[in-house]
Image (cartoon, rainbow, N blue to C red; front, side):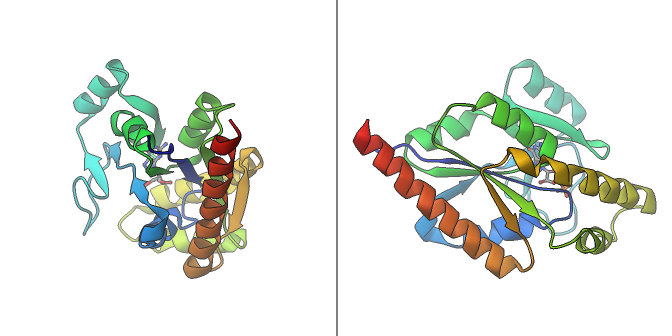
Length: 200
Ligand code: 5GP
């Protein structure tokens, strides 16, 4: 039987660069990572692809998923809803793949509560090198109104507090360095979980 894979949770404040770091990390095929594609009611941004970046759905479809217990977690973030579909995650982990969730702080907190005591879980919190860096990154998203940008900035700063609940904290000063650091955390955790299985 294949060894179980890891559930890897990457979270951090809005604008810290989770998405960019995660995309870079996924290029390292030796880590055998499967990205858990989320559902959102937010409209697609330019260049975003259905089923790759998100499943873009209506409010009705999102409600249906909630009613059917289809989400591992879900939340509302700056006016739109986001959720992690449950179905594929357990299948992939049982097949030995490492599933990566890249989600915001509230939803990640829900997952951390649910997986308490389970040992094939890795939680990583990405922090900005300083609060100014966070604001600068958020402002680069010109597709959003000033009000939404301010809301994202304030939320981002208040979310930094949540880092205490995570096993690992990584400062995102450069995408390349952070992806490398996270890759070595994942390699370490893979070895730990194999050692655990031999012992059991
Ligand atoms: P964006 O609109 O910039 O793509 O995403 C906004 C925030 O929602 C980001 O912090 C992103 O990581 C997070 N996010 C994406 N998918 C999910 C999800 O399924 N659940 C939760 N809780 N957050 C998500």
